[in-house]
Every structure is written in structure tokens, then in C-alpha cells.
Amino acid sequence: MKKQIFFALFQFVAVLFCLNGQQIVTAERFLESVSEKYAEFKDYQAHIAIRSGSTDMYGTVVHKTPSFLRIDFTTPAEQVIVFNGDILTVYLPEQRAILNQSVSSSRSSGANLATAQGLSLLRRNFAAAFITGPAPVPLDEGSREMVVKLRLSRRYGSEGFREIILSVDPVSLLIRRMQGTTIADIQVQFDFSNISTNQGISERRFMYDSPASANLYNDFLFRDTE
Picture 1 (cartoon, helix red, strand yellow):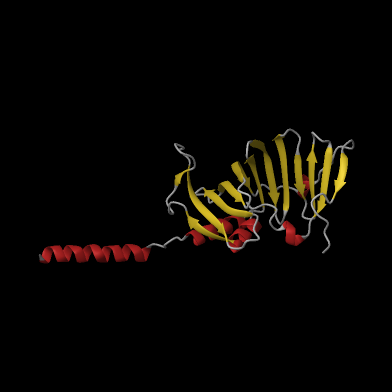
Picture 2 (cartoon, rainbow, N blue to C red):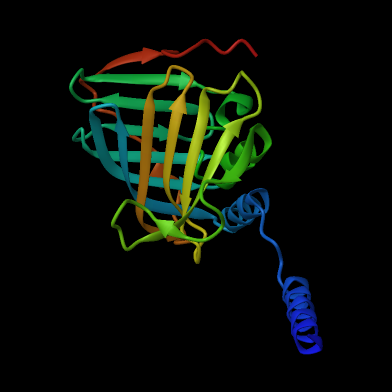
């Protein structure tokens, strides 16, 4: 009996020491670590795949701090989205249309969620929780790629996304996938692959010479009255 008590006591003390030597990682702390990682990036480039309903789009996304963003699409071919921190430009080749929108700093801060600024907004406006715990799980059923999955639930009713699921590489802390559910229950998915960072991307990369034959439409989203 004494041996059993001693063994149980030994196990209890061993568990105490193990817990004392380990940092318990919460979902909020893990998301903070991801945000800190992205804060180290001066620039970022990746292949991007976007799925919304039955529509699939593919291209290359480029970001440079503080708020430069460009997406060159291969599907739809030649479609471009460029944001230089002040003006959002969208070129729609099928309509031969160029859409320009002046964007204030308050509106542009969420232009790209997979950036340090965007992650800061997510931490502020969404509550994070692990979907299945902090241990990595397959990205898709049967996939060999392992990720940590977080569910972000909005804190405020004004957010356009009701829920966002982040799939994060547990080693590099890079976001591999973002899945959003809008308040209208529309599912949107962003996949990022072949990611490279801090490559010294020039601001000239975000200058766009639109086709002269395209029709120009200004303030297509809203008129800035600030």
C-alpha cells in the first residue's frame, strides 16, 4: 500500500514539474504569435486561390508594408486588383472596365486580412478558439499537410464575417488557408501557397498602367466624405 501511495505521489509531482516547465498555449496566444510573425515581414508574396460559391479564382498576391497590395489573376486572365494605400484599382478585362476607389486609412486597414495590420484587426474584433485543440490536424481529410485550426467568432455585429477559420502552419506560423462565412451565409475561402517573404519588393510593383481602351469608373464603391 505504501509503495502504491509513493508511486502515485511520484506521478503527481512529476506532472506538476512537467506543467511548470511548459507554457500553456491558448488560442488567443497562438493567434498573437501569428500576428507577431507577420509583423516581421516587410513584404510578402504567394500564390492565391479564391473560392466563393461555385467560382474559383487563381493568381499571385503581393503585399508590402504598410498597406500596398496587388493581385494579378491568371483566372480570370489579366484581371488585376491594386491598392497603393490611397486608391483601390480593379481591372475587369471582360468588361474592359477600370474601377477606381479612393480609400481612407480607416477603411483601408482591413484591405488584406493576411497581414500584420489585418491580423491585429482580427484579434481586436474576433474571439479565437481552437477547433480541435492546439495539436496540428490535416488541412483536408486525408491530407499529409498538418495545420493548427482556429475558429474566430465576431465580437461585434458590425463585422462583415460572422466566422473565420484560420489554418496555420505550426512551424512557420504562416497562414495556409482562411475560410470566412459572411452574415449572409456566403462561404469564401482563400488558400495561400509558395509563400516568400522579405524579398525586397519595390513600391514600383504596385504601379499599374491600365489599358487605354478600357472605360474608367471612379468611386464605384462609395464616396469618401471624410
